[in-house]
Length: 397
Image (cartoon, rainbow, N blue to C red; front, side, top):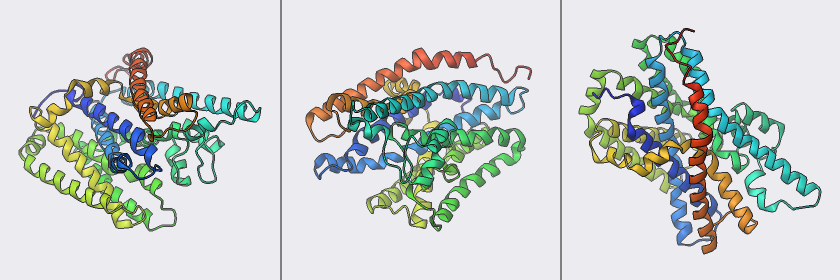
């Protein structure tokens, strides 16, 4: 077993960067071509819908890192204070800056429309997508964004809200999960902790199956509700616990052929379901699809960490992925607004890829958001992170 600190595993930055780039690819190609007429680009873009599952890899990675930090500090006197203050200073500043900018922009567009200055059509896709009987500026949505409860609002409405803030559902899932995780790790005896976490993993597909049997089921709810994503998050936590047990980790390293087999099997099952147009209203399909997805990405994660000298780990150590991984949080929050604003400014409409100029502007938006995310990391996020460093787990409470 390697004794390297998980925070120093460069592959983890690479995994984070790779995942962030896949999310950008999904939104910049698949999302904006779903309504396009049939053609070669539309055919390719349709199959990029598969990449939406990359969020499970983010959940596994986040669960691994956060649970590892908490487990190592579980007996520390400053356990809760250090954890929550550090998380707040890491996550809140950029998040609330993006949310605040959204509402300021929405107010400015509303003012322009009501005074006759503009019709606001160019911004409609980005800031005011119809959401059932709700509107993105409705008080319930405002409160949900401010309280990290937007995944509940999305599940209730069956829609993702304004595209500007639609990716934030995953932040809500993580923040809700990490409200309880410190309590779990602090107070559950270490010898029982794995079993409890495994219970969360098993509960997720059962909860998805149960929801699919009720009148409240919809594809958005299945995707964004926190208890229904416990399998991916739980696998990340479980991996962190196994990583800190030399005997358990040595056993994992010796069973790599089985992890390859499971990765192949689950990937094949996922491809079969996806190619047959998975129904998110069918209980058995919903329950097994997300669980297989979580297992597949967990196997990928294990294969990387159990053989760091291998080609798979080397793939994620590529400098490009590692560099993007450093500022992936900003990239994740900013990429959709930048896409919508770029097309609104240049063409005065919602983004699409049906002409060469549109494709060129979309590529330009990708380059722009990479630069903005890097700038945000260096000039905005890092100073807040440094402010959190004095809050140490081993300091007196």
